[in-house]
Image (cartoon, rainbow, N blue to C red):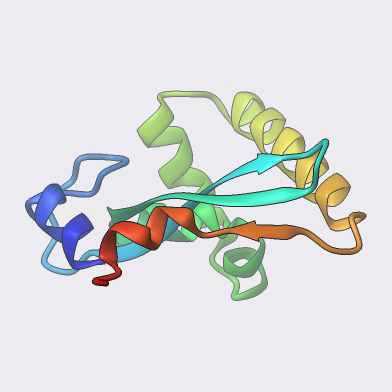
Amino acid sequence: RHEAYDKAQGKCMICGRKVNRLEAHERWVYDDKNHVQILSDIIAVCHSCHEVIHYGRTSLMGRGEKAEDHFMKVNECSYVEMRKALGIATEIHRKRNEVKEWKLDLSFLKKYIKE
C-alpha cells in the first residue's frame, strides 16, 4: 500500500484528483475458465472512487447516488451509459459468485518477501 501511495504522489490513480487521504485498493485479474483470482496490483484511490469500485456496499450504505454522480463525472458519461456499465459489472459479479471456490494467486506479493 505504501508503494501505491508513493507512486500516486497524493493523487487518485483513477480520477487524478489531489486528496489528503488516499485508500489502497487491490486490483484483481480473473481467469474465469480455470477459476483463478490473481492479485495484479495495489493502487491508491480517493474515497469517492473507492466507493464507486465497491458500489454494492456503497449503495447499501445509502451513498449510491453520490457514487453514480462521481462515476458519470469521471467517465464523462450519461446516466444511461453509467447504468449500462453497472449492469455489465453486476452480471460479471453474479456469474463469478456461482463458482464454489476460486484458486488464489498472490504471486504479485513475492517482490515484498525477503528471503
